Picture 1 (cartoon, one colour):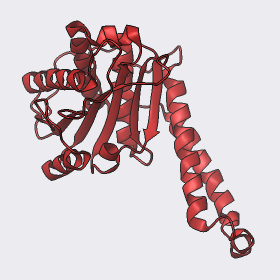
Picture 2: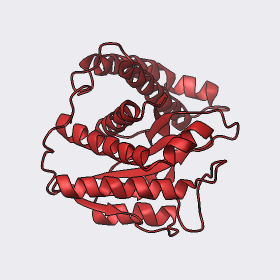
Picture 3: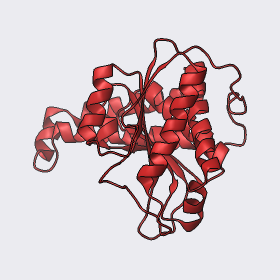
Picture 4: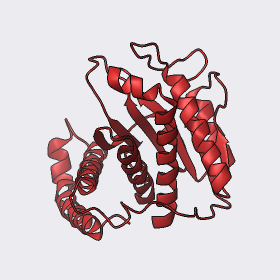
Length: 263
């Protein structure tokens, strides 16, 4: 579980903000500031502050020299996930190749390969019901992806992507959740990011808040993974290897198992 100190500090911050908000949202104060801020905007700012604080503390804890007890534990026999519905979402596809590396590697192909490997691991080792939003090279809209997961009543939604940057110098792995996601949702992001960094040995860019359609419009714990940068020559070469994709799939599988063992 995420350390109790984090939540203690988080609760203290909420109480301080609540005291601040009580005075800030008084009628005289609102009247004086109505020209440039209203109550809704101020509440949004406060929520943003809380989200940023949570992310900063979570990422700080992940990098401490004394890690949580679960960190070095390799999942043994997988727990039964009977009744759980997990949707894997390989990003892009068909007419949408996603990012393309200098060497010609297409994001859509890497996404699909990794997702199918995770699918196999989950089907073979757990009792979960596992679905892919696409299992071939075809285009599916963002709305169709989120709608499929919602109609299935999924418990987890994991969107798999490869990152890219115009400058070609960015590297590493990052995991996104929606800014107002639940505690369990952030825990899922934590475990997946942790295992991917540990297994692939790439730069840890942390867990982040995002506004991507597939994590905003899905009604279950949802994350979007960015597994390396295809725009970086070294990471493109790594992602082109079957062994790297298998290791990424093993990491995602291990992250899911750790999540269920610790929530």
